[in-house]
Image (cartoon, rainbow, N blue to C red; front, side, top):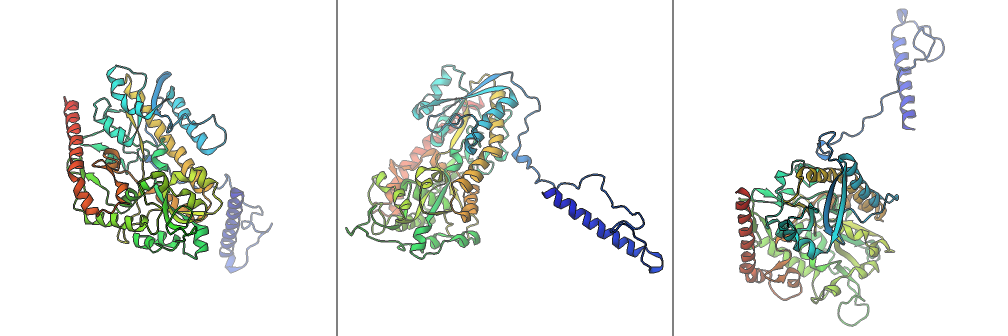
Length: 507
């Protein structure tokens, strides 16, 4: 259809040009002799192009998204084997191609690497404790069958200090500067001079778990509330803008004098343990950063903005007069059931929740928004990605070239095929029931970040999970001062481990 329209336009323009040329080239200004209608002057035949009109060029391929593996690279049927979490595997939880976008994209990632490099790719499922706890034992025993461990963020960092994994600078075929290795985030994964864990593009956990806000549009309509699409687009979606909704939905339905899941409230969460950490990331004041030596350090102590954010989250999301999050029972703090039954306006969560049975089977429409910026001066929205999974290459591998080439091929292909199947096909289309949220879903995906505290101390500060602070009557500054010595001691041990590892590598 497009080609036919282009050809018709081409002929029409050519006819017009021919007529103009004939009008300008007649004898003494007289009309030229024209036969056969709209022809070239004096020929009597319609012009016929020798070839079809050129098809418009497609968008050029970004070389940063395509691997540079040597053409013809082959490993003669070699075996590539990963060990992964049983419930968070990256490749085996699919069937042969069946027409379902995510299933087929996972299948193709494996098939692509196998056919490109002549290898056999398998994934062994292990329990989380076994995956993190036996990596060093496995390596020291001289085992070589498993070459790559896919580990959860905090276990990956701990395992990296055990001196059994290959520094990725020695992985010949892995180009960590490419987009499919998370080039915008990867700098957080290096400690000192070395990097042992990489953010690949075939572990969907590292992408779909990007924090976002859900808004129940039926509740918004019932209470005549504005849906903040325009604020997100023009950059005015801030903490203050979100706080304007506080108390907008507050109804003690059962009349027992306290907020419970039988009532209606403004704010809730799929997991209240992540709420504070998501807002700290959104405000660009995480607990940890990097020092001049590229080593982790705390940035939270003495940080007034961070204290303000903690106080704001407590007042907005954990006020006992307007929230059901009033105990340390984590199950009672999950309010997804309220949201899907139109008794809650906003719910914090992550993009992966869109794939859950609860939201997929929800009757009402909901919108997706990024977490707000701290204020309008903040340059960008920020979405914290929790529970990332990272591949790590055991230093005992017999053919590091083969292992690195397979990881490179899978990550590059997944970036081009698997991630679009996740974001564009599944999240923005198949499981999204609000067309105006498409752009917001892209914003959340594009502004993902990793937090060092998730890798090193998680949300455990001095043996006190940060979410417990939210419902206790403790001033944020007082709490920070009380845990500073404990958490700095814990970090000092991590730094010592990194220092020892650096010395061992340099020998």
